[in-house]
Length: 152
Image (cartoon, rainbow, N blue to C red; front, side, top):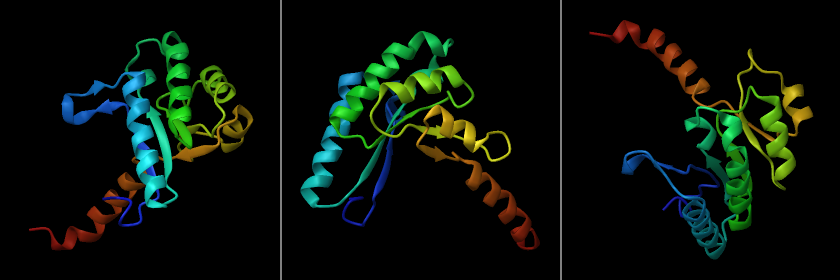
């Protein structure tokens, strides 16, 4: 579906929200990404796959899951991910540096233009930035004000 309409970038989470929020195993997530890569390649569409892991997101101690997360991200790269996205470590220099040193593709990080410094991310080796829901939230607030005169 998405390839046929010209979609060229995908964030693929290991959390399966449609199944109660379970987290795919490393092998299952890598297989899922490999299937997406094969479908894109077979269709001749250059799709960028950002392999996301939520291991840090759900961990009480993010450092405790570092080795598992690195193993997972390396498996995603081998499966065809063009970048990896370890969610929720954007404020931890040590974890970001460890992840960027461990993988051969750009590492994605969430960032906020007021809270975060892009030069810091560059120094740590981050190669891709996302704003998460920031732009959507800003547009929602603007649209609420704009549409207020039409409110019942």
